Length: 115
Length: 327
Image (tube, rainbow over all chains, first blue to last red; front, side, top):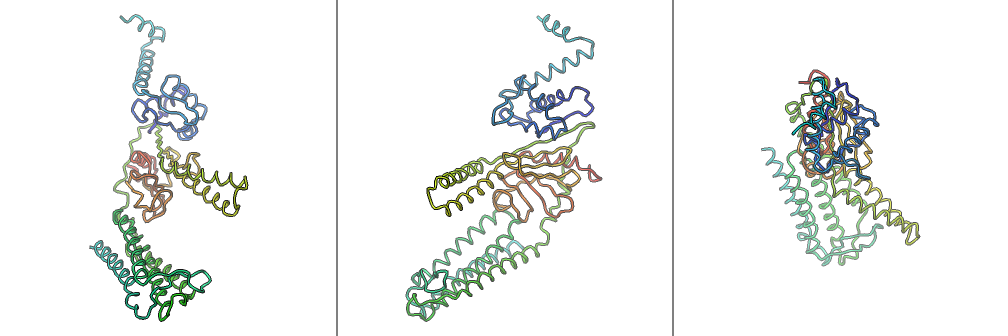
C-alpha cells in the first residue's frame, strides 16, 4: 500500500496520519481484512512518533475503519471503503464551511434544517 | 544457435554416459563372475552387497537417466539464465557414476566369486576429486563463455519512476507470506518440541534425540524466517525484514541503490524457495511471480525479493534516488 503525507500540512500530525490511512482505504490501497503495517513500521517510515501513529490508528478504529485484533495486529474492517469515503467528504465539508466562516454548530443547524 | 549447441551437448553427454554405464559390464562379461560385488563397507575389506550382471549394467544407467531428466527438464523450462546449473550438475554426476562403474568392473574383473572382489579406497577418493574438479571446470567454462550474463539486461531501459508531487512524503508497504512454508515450519517445529520433551523425559537414547532436536529446530527456524517477508520504501530507502518477528532485516539507503525494477521470477529459475544465490544474484523467493529487484550501487549482482505490488515499490524507490539519473 502507498501512503502519502503532505509535508506543508499544518494540522496536528495524528490527524495527518489518520487522513493518509483513510485515503489509502478509500482508494482501495488496502482491502478489508488486510493487515496494516505495524505502528512501529509506520512511525519509522513516516518519520512520526509511534504514539502519534497509535493515536491516529485508535481514532480510525473508533470511526469503524480499522479493527484491532489480538495476535493479528491492525486490520481493515469489513466495508471500510465507503465509510472512509464518507468520512473524507464530511471533513472536506467541515473545511469548506470553516473557510466560508461557518462554525460547526452552524453546520449542524444547517443539516438539521434540511427537509 | 548457441542454445541448440548447448542442448546437443547435454543430449550427447547424457546418451554417452548411459551407453558407457550400461555397456561396460556387458562388454567385460566373459571375465566377470555371475554376480558382481557392488558395495563395500567403510573398512575397504570384503564387499557387503552384490547384483546380478544385468542389474549392475542397468541400475546405474537408470539412476543416471532419471537424474539427468530431473535436472534438465526444469532448468530448460526456467529460461536461459539458470542453465549453468545443468553443466555443473550433470558433469560431476556423470563422472562419479562412470568412475564408480569402472571401479566396480575393475574390482570384479577375473574373480571367480563376488566375495573376493576388493575395492581400494584410493579409487573412491580419486573419483570424488575428479568430480569436484569437473564441477568447478564446468562452472568456469559455462560462466566464462556466457560473459556477464546480467549485463545485457541492464535495467536502465526499464526503470520506471513515480512522480512525487512537491512537498509530499510517500511511503510504500508490502508483505508476502507463503502459507506452505509457514505450515512446514510449524510441523517441523512440533517435531523439535516432541524431541525436546522426549529428551527431558529421558524416553530414548539422548545422542540421536539431540541430533533430531537440533535438526528440526534449525529447519523450523529457517522455514519460519523465510515464510514471510515485509518490505517498505520510504525516505530512509528500502527496508526488508523477514519472518513473523521482522528479524533479520536488511536496509539500503536511497543513495545505495543504482536502479530498482519489477521482474517476474519463478522458484525454478533461482533454485527453489528461501534465500537463494543463483546466476540472477540473490533472491528471497517465497512464491512465483512479481519480484522487486534492486541493483545496489557498486555491485554487479542484483538483490530480489518476491513481493506483491513490486512495480510501484520500484517506481517509488527510483523516484527517491538522488542524483542526475532521476527523471
